[in-house]
Image 1: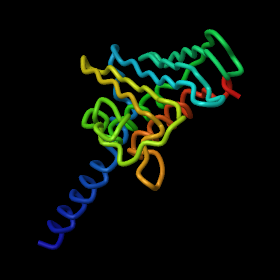
Image 2: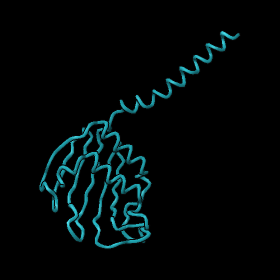
Image 3: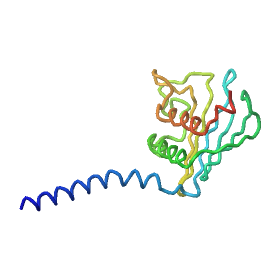
Image 4: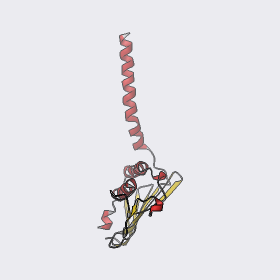
Length: 169
């Protein structure tokens, strides 16, 4: 009887350990949908805010289009790893992107406060046949900073993972 309990306990431990390792491994191996396309576009402000657009495709190719107040004007190209692309997709999920409004520009759009002279960030994603775009005026504030915070953090992560600083500064 004790031997049977030990076997059962051993099987249970293997099952728990196997389940904990499984999802992480599967996520790392998960294929990126072929139609994946992520964009971030930032506009000028009353001043010298960088004006550019960055596009990231399903194969990790990054295209930067510098317009004003950037180091690189015109097109520049780079790439990110598939792991970086998976991180970006996870960031969109974390921000609950498809649940957010289509724009945050005025009080009517859900902005608690609207400050003037800020740039606008326009993000978009297409994945698995589903698309969404959000126009986010950076003057949309809630007293603690840009609102909504999750969208602002997503915009910054796109820049970080795409490596846009190399073309901006």
